[in-house]
Length: 416
Image 1 (tube, one colour):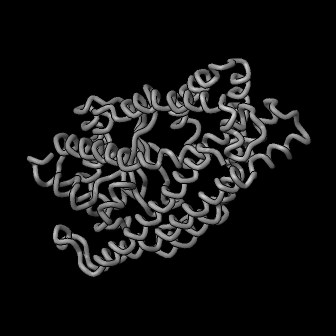
Image 2 (image 1 turned 180 degrees about the vertical axis):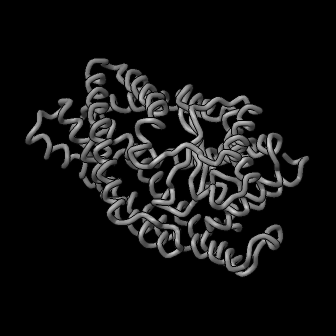
Image 3 (image 1 turned 90 degrees about the vertical axis):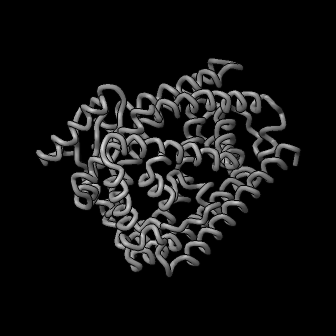
């Protein structure tokens, strides 16, 4: 075991231990505050709803811990356990090793194995925890249909893209990682363009917003905010879940605003306008573009590091691989990458929470801070979101600010 292998193993185990410790803290903290509603919410959220949220959070946590342990064992099996080399050898019996077809088969097999690993946890969450707490509405038949559609979509789009990627790697020589980055960036932009009109409708039904009064109100808000969209739509989210949300998606002329039907059932017109104003706040502050502006050079740097590692003789052997082709390098790198990027989780979560505060402040200016706070309280209550997360856990994993902090900022003008 060389130095890189030791470094990777330490990063993986330390990350796993940290994640499990934080999950344990979250469970203990939420349970410790289960029997008293925080003072800021005492008048708006009943004790029974608060306790339900605590129980829901505690019920989900063991699944998260199990996923973390299973994921670490999966990576160890494929690397030090020789699993990836075994898959490489099996496909080498029927396809020329190192060829584009062989590389596609290797990476596709890795994807299928990852899906099989996740499936028990997805089933337990969907038909266990979510059903127990009244959120799941997806039937086994629809779940299977969704899975088949996802697999067909992955095969129709993913396999050709993998083939192009591996083909370009073979042609580009030492600078293959630069071509891989350009292809990756182009794919991400393309997906954002086609997702609203071609991909999302494969899974949900989108109908134009029919409420004339609400539509007029929303269009007035869009005019004030200088936002142009290709339409206002209602999505049948209730087919799968009782959770509610709203979002806008797409780029350029493909931008559209989508309301979950469950959201429209829970909120009044003032609250819906405020929630949408929050989403428009992300657009106003160009959060998506800012994230792309950071993600693009970061991904380029990551692929450049992969290009350097793939040229080091000890990289493959350190991770249980005898083969040293491009597909193997990609497979190994994306197996080990989460272990090294885990320490960035608090920074990324902080960045996301900053964006949420900015969007809240924008919504308060364009609509009503009181209405947004009221909407958030309803969503926290109806979605069983805990009001008392462990502070350290929240800093690591929560992309949205804790409820008390967020509501407090909204209702205290000088803090926005």
